[in-house]
Length: 398
Image (spheres, rainbow, N blue to C red):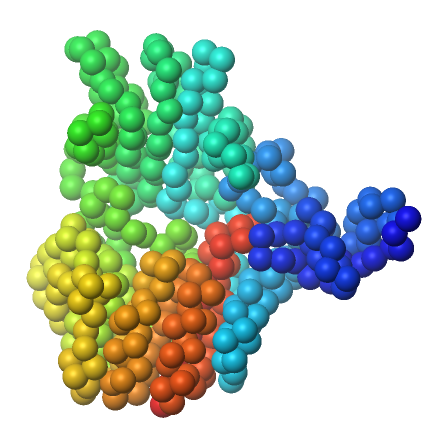
């Protein structure tokens, strides 16, 4: 029989871990694992607010209280840096997005037993959890789930759909993949659904690529007070408050620069925020996002120069970076190894690295520190509340 043990930390995938290394699902720091293997809740064990927790793969950490949740986010960043031998001079308090604040998400829909099931998938499974409540989605997004369920109930045959939702200036932007619309009756019914729900846009992929089915007016998002065209499926920070926390860090660290570079710029999330102080070069590979950023800059006459460039295949070279006051980059989860290698060889004095993956961030950060940069400050951000996904903003200087 095992001796009682105490949970001392939460591992990267959400399991509680004892000092001896035992992993215990749904355990929080301070919980006790008794001799029978049962978990006795400790001071940081919270009651999950959602009935689906433990089955739905959207959340992994609803059993943690606020302190333990913030510690998890902070520790993921700190441990990633330590594993690469990076010393952090200053760690800011963790920012955690509030419940019901996520403004974009991908749901799945299947006809299970002749009725629609809509929600996130189960953890480590393709099965869909039929969502009856959600404590992470913005109310405007969750309000669409029941109408979607009723709309799909009228459809015949088997289906497995993806449903991308995003909250825009005009309302909910919805993109459904895998749903064919046949005949006048189905077309009119779907148009009435769009009208009744006040959708900003409905995109359909019937097997030949996504096409706009409903869009009463051009869809936009507002970034740092700038109205930007929003291409369906374009990257958008998961929550407004998380975006504000990341942008505030970049502005504080780079806001006085006269010549700044925004790499993996997307729609211009950081570029427009930094444009108040000087000229910003915004480089992005996705053509629709690049064109949206370019159009918004031209319309508002902002000092943002949008450049279409694949930074994985053709990173900006060190000689192109020299003379800049600072660089901000927010790459995909895989990081930006080749681009960071060029930054490391340049004379750029300040680099703001925003990341949604502490592992790739620390790997890239090690190249910067080896080249003489020091990690001056880190701000951990838990934008995906109750999830093991962690984001951060960091400042490297030399």
